Image 1 (cartoon, one colour):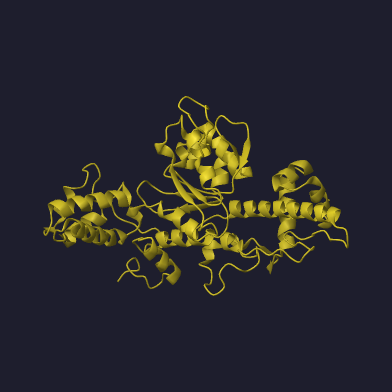
Image 2 (cartoon, one colour; image 1 turned 30 degrees about the vertical axis):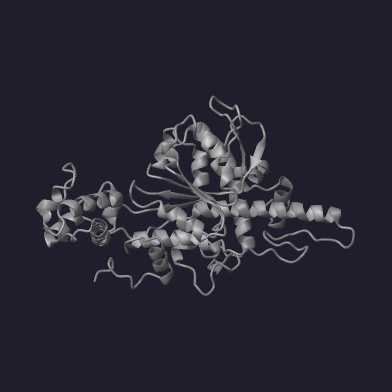
Length: 426
């Protein structure tokens, strides 16, 4: 049995997910995408899912939601390409009575309905530019305004988006906002097309043919070696959705027969030849620089908020004093702040699935990252080393301009000055 058919090397956690969501296939690229979705699920970041039409992108937002802390709240899926441009803002953000012709009453939008949960924006590249601006504001501040209203509302929501478009091309052509693209793609998951999944296609053929035989009460179709070869050598431009449609037709009209290559080709569009040589994509490798930089910025922002909270506690305290936090994620007033999910799980995803016995409980460790950039002279970097290097690089990028650096790192100039002095970066 080939590696593509075997489940021997697939972790039991992945097998359970495949069974729960009826995901068929063992291609390394598919298993890698499932693993990535499970590992990012507990980390409350935006996720962008990239994949061709019909490749199965819709499974992954469900995995992310169900394995997150939001799993008991609402999950709403929205097909952005199916909503007319004139009503998309109303659908997403809601509207007030009289906001436009036909608005006979006020209405909640999906972002209000799913507050506390997850919203899946399928075909996000189809959003109009004006709606993209509104979405960017939600991602940055959690704020939005209903159509026809002037009142700012807040929502606590996680956005998972998906598209089959080349997003960088859309950005370069001015069809998609660059800042929104980077916000959405904090973590990116690539879904392999069916033609790169090797013998997964034959597993799907068996599954679909048996399902349709049961559904229609007909004898199952058999495929000889030539038919299986033709199926493997077809490009499947419509991916799993197209394969399912073809097998349904074959199950209806060839019930009980043994189908050969010549017969199966009658059900395949002639413009796509069956002499394509299939490849099996390996598990994808990722450049985590962007994700790591975003996480650093989130930590700096967290530090700034904790310092503000400490200052407020100091001013309200009547007895005793509360020390200021000097650590990125330490609150010295009542003990230490310790996240329940390790940021390392996002930064070092390529090192494999987290140990089941110690799931997502370790404190942040930036020493293990891509290209082993978390080392200085062969020694692991501490969190303070990482903070110093991040500030140094940001200063260099901004030519020493401290105001610009503070804005980029989402911290106050006062905090930046203190850090520069503390780390000897004058």
